Length: 301
Ligand SMILES: C[S@@+](CC[C@H](N)C(=O)[O-])C[C@H]1O[C@@H](n2cnc3c(N)ncnc32)[C@H](O)[C@@H]1O
Image (tube, rainbow, N blue to C red; front, top):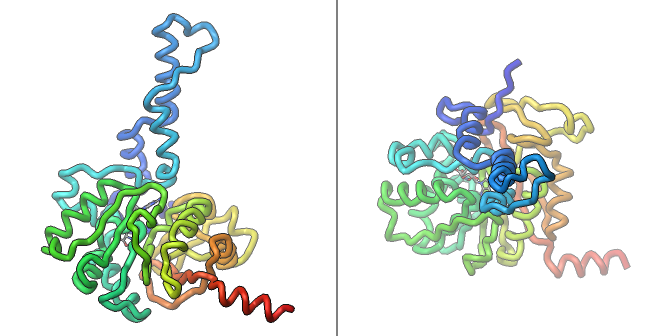
């Protein structure tokens, strides 16, 4: 059976197409090795043990490790952005999922005076709904993909939202602290569905200190039953036809694993109802407050 690799619609372009175009547009590990061999050949050393030659591409490979776990390392061209292709690149369903995020956050108590962080904001599918509602300067979007942030700027112009002074940042380590703000709410939609656990943990560790005392980070996951089979078997997610795996994009995790990740970052994790067309589930992360820790200690003594 053909596996649907996409956690999001990509306007008819399959995952393997996207991945191969990404691979062809970036130097890879094999290319780096070829460079090393080529450098050795230049010095006439091909038949001897090759001397290690550090190339600029090696440096690139080290730095890019954070991003090359899914196809979002591919950079969109200026023409693709002008044609609006970023909307399918980040998952399609532009208005539907944008509105879903916005209505969800209002239900959770988002007010215009709140500071709001959008982690993995992409091209602002949610952002173009949040920015008009929030007070000027209260929207903060971060993404690893510089071309998505270019597309986000394109959308800000398209929706005539320049006067709202949204903050946008390209960062490959989820460093929300670079904004120098504390957030009442953060959201990460279709972000962790594309990331391995160790990257998710880094994100939680970076976001947690940037939340206000009562702040909440809402993030979506594909969930799987708590069963050892989920490590090796794929899961057909009901609704959108997405097939998820534990060790490749799109990823699934159990709620127990999500709670374990949260605990490493001094957070609790609770599933919150929302109705995503492709069965992504929403998890709310809250800081384990110092008071509740103290209370907990008192209870056990
Ligand atoms: C499916 S898109 C969703 C974008 C946006 N949240 C939305 O709802 O439209 C996933 C986004 O996560 C971003 N992303 C993937 N890995 C990331 C990472 N390690 N750090 C920050 N952003 C990342 C991608 O570049 C992409 O823009």
